[in-house]
Image 1 (cartoon, helix red, strand yellow):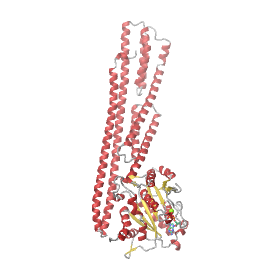
Image 2 (spheres, protein in one colour):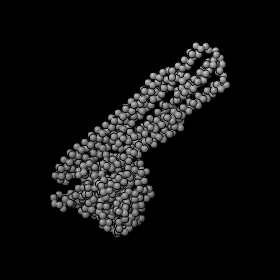
Image 3 (cartoon, protein in one colour):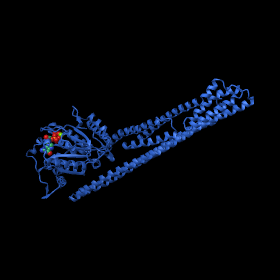
Image 4 (cartoon, protein in one colour):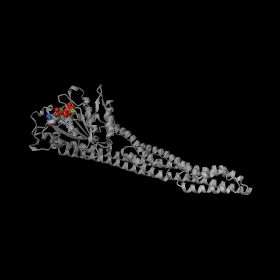
Length: 624
Ligand SMILES: Nc1nc2c(ncn2[C@@H]2O[C@H](COP(=O)(O)OP(=O)(O)OP(=O)(O)O)[C@@H](O)[C@H]2O)c(=O)[nH]1
Ligand SMILES: [Mg+2]
């Protein structure tokens, strides 16, 4: 992308809507994404800084008047400058707090979407982090009402769960002109932020109001940092934002913005969904659409539902991708048909394993294995189709071979060469030679025995006529010869059926191996999903413990004690979630195995019936 595009715009009725063209761009991005969103009051230099993050001076439109410029949420996808294999998605948002807009709900929605979509949220402000600046971030206090974690318990306060999937937080202060000193000592940016976010003890309503945004920031954004843009050589008119021309920047300014960019690149991680699921560009697009549609319909975006919706979309495409891998590989193999069954089977196994791998890469939360089953069933259907095509090719090849080997015999038949005394023996000798030659050349063909059986049946009509016309043989001799021929025909029929059985067994063996491989991959994926879930819970637990320690240190014993209870509950919930998930996985594996065994048993049964039918058949029904 050489320039940004609008990702979320506003329709004429004021409702938010996702732009199709932006979704198409995201659809193409299969890499994991690091999403940096910048929010803050209007006219504070957000778009300007976003351009710097993209390594450019222009791109996101900058305002040169006091009117707010950016509308909705704009997106720019670039290669991540330091994390290979990931895409950096920059989201520039509409400035908050423009009273002329007269719609504060709109601001809250923009803020929520930035929180929901990003892995790093940059909150941009100007001047200092004073009381007013913190109050301006009142949007954080609305997050609990605007975002739900679980769809089930309507009124549950799941704010403690937020920390599991909320972005990391960077507070930037532009045109910072104060000295960073706390109690007379030099302080770092982070110390400055923590100092500004310090809770005030006391019980009055005012103090509570004053503490609320601070508490919310501390709870929701445990991983936070601060960056102040202070320019010792700041131009005189720096306070007038519109006067800063990007083309005319001091080296100090450039050095500071470079440092800021490095910090952002270093602090921001790949966007993850609940349960540690990695977000690719494609998922991000679907996520944006789901959230915006939910908000536009007046409902509250819910993380659990979003994960379910994402899983559905992703799993469907994962099945398609897996099938593509299988099909394109088999199409290549098809060029060399006819092949021995073992060659087709082993390529089937290999490609089916690759298809499962491809599927596993982008699928998630396929809790009942529905999508993996669909992949398996579709692959098996395709496999049957390819086996059939291989058989047809083999049949053609065997028929061609027989017709060229039997061409002289056909000539002889036409000339009635065998219609003479001793003709039957001559005919049998020629036929034997043809069969010998054929067997040596076609013995590896899947259809060799069946085609030969058919050929011999056809030739038995000629043979009967020749036998009857052969005066050299007595009636008794003719009868014996006829019986011998009948027996050998039946033998060929049995041979053909046995070959079919062998092939079926080979196919079943291939299916068994494919199933084992699929189960292995599924188990691996489940272990990974469980591990991610556990890590996420541990991470959340850590930050809660840190929060509690900080409260204790600052003398808020009551609050810290209250947290102990909350922590216990959190731990219990995590353990329960994990054990539920593990149970789900075990059930799924069991179901899979059961399904496989049933289908194998069915194949065996069909096969048994076929074999019994041959064995029961009276010998007399052979065409002679
Ligand atoms: N003084 C000062 N001016 C800046 C700074 N960064 C950008 N500007 C200038 O401020 C003006 C507005 O910048 P934008 O980046 O458009 O601001 P914005 O926050 O995106 O504005 P909205 O989209 O309306 O919310 C431009 O003329 C920038 O050149 C800064 O750090 N200090
Ligand atoms: Mg802007």
